[in-house]
Structure formats: structure tokens, C-alpha cells
Length: 109
Image (cartoon, rainbow, N blue to C red; front, side, top):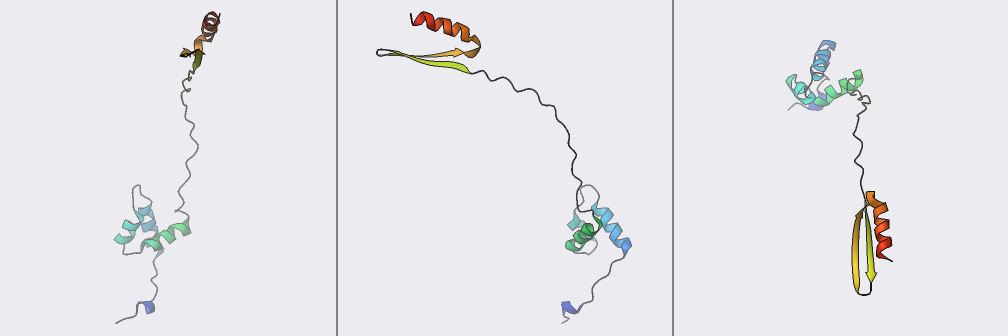
């Protein structure tokens, strides 16, 4: 049985490396699939990519996105009035705050 550790290192031509790296650069290409198709270990191909600077994907540039203005959240005026044993809960739209104040003045006279 031959010891695998004594096997000489494989040397790959620059042409093969360029061909493999070009295939890896294709959209949707898998480095592992390309390496397997060429009888290479995927880690070797990843190392070639790092050495040539191809592994780093370009950062996406900033793209401003226009967002619609958020809808104004209209809070309601909420009041709880107690007179003796009677309790009233009043919910009034905040857009009509002046009318709410007038109503309260009349109610509390």
C-alpha cells in the first residue's frame, strides 16, 4: 500500500488555473462543482481565488431608496370621568381637540 504522504505535490499550469478561475467567475457557478469537474479539491481553488483577489465580492454601492412618508399616526384623546358611582370613558379624535375641550367645559359646568 502506497503512503499518500509521500506522493509528490501536484503542479498546475497557469492556463489550467486561469480556466478554472474563469469558470468559477461565471454567474451561478459553484466553486466546488468546478473543482470536482477538474479533479481538484475545492480548497485549492478557493486558495487560487484568494491569491488572485477574485474571492472578494465587490461591495454593493449605496443605492438611495425613496420611501413614502409614514402615515401620520393619529392618537385619540382618552379620558375617564368619574362622578359618584358613575364612570365614563371618553375617546375623542385628537384632530378635534378644540371641540373636545368645549364639550368638557359644558359637561363639567
